[in-house]
Image (tube, rainbow, N blue to C red; front, side, top):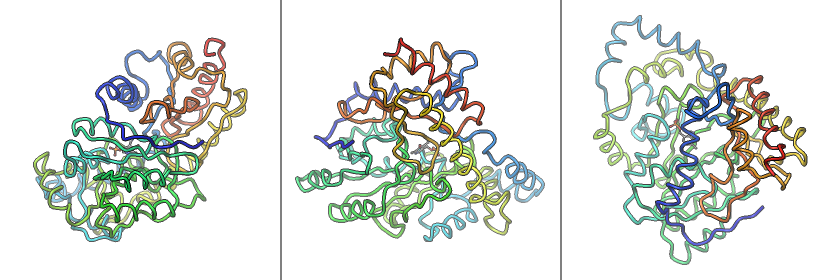
Length: 417
Ligand code: PMP
């Protein structure tokens, strides 16, 4: 499949409210509650996801870190007091060392979404243009909506980006302020941007003077054996790195960080100070202990050890779901990218299936759900209707089997044709 970029798409309130935003936003919110939203059938097993499953969460490390903190009166008092806006020093220093950057460029946030929102607030003015992958993680539009920006889609096909089309548009005078990308295990496609494409996008950013906002929410969650190219240049003054602890340690912690270009440190920190001063010191102190920052020994293998166990489990779950769907559906499914992360982007090959009807049946009769691929596409008409995004991380194996059986029931129902 190849898709071509067309004219910049203004994010009309209708498109946002009627399609992309309400449809996906509502589902994502529901997925965070594991399908317990009003309207879900009792006992529903939705394949939505976006969160780790209970068995992938580092419960023991959290228990031990919390116990150690609460048993140390001095540390506990410090964790209950105000602290500096960019985040507590030992954790920032640990992050800086891990990323190979100066600690002054690290700003601890309440997760990736907050980091993105902060960066958009710091950078965007009404009428600015931004380049966004198409398909993309559409919850960014919830935030972009109030900036009233114009969006230049960067078509993402099976083999990667249509960078030539973007370059042509830039040559023709489009002047975007920033480019938003999810480089590793892209949501929804699972795509990992190859090194050569990262280099070309960086060259374009340098030539045309825009900022690359690299949302690496799934960093470290590559399936065992999958090679991931080097990150966008951490030393570059044109790249903002957005990271989160959500996907490995738990989204309820609400903790992540930004690695900022030096010129953005001041504006982003001032903005942050005006919002809420800083992230919870208590949560930062727990994470400090788990990752082994300061003089602490890492717990439960630290961030990488915990991620290693999760990614091995997710690889198994991905293969299980892909295999079950492929075997049970007439024509099977195509999966373009088996790389990592927590989503399976599957194309149902039986063209006779009406996916929207099947989804409706799945929700109302079979007791499951998956997100229709079309909600991730920016432009009407480039939507690949055969696609479903299936969350593989939030259910254990038996739950996944049940969810897939039900989804297959809906997809093969005569009413979904
Ligand atoms: N970016 C991407 C690409 C995501 O998929 C998600 C979570 N669904 C986020 C950001 C938000 O992460 P957090 O929970 O840390 O805000």
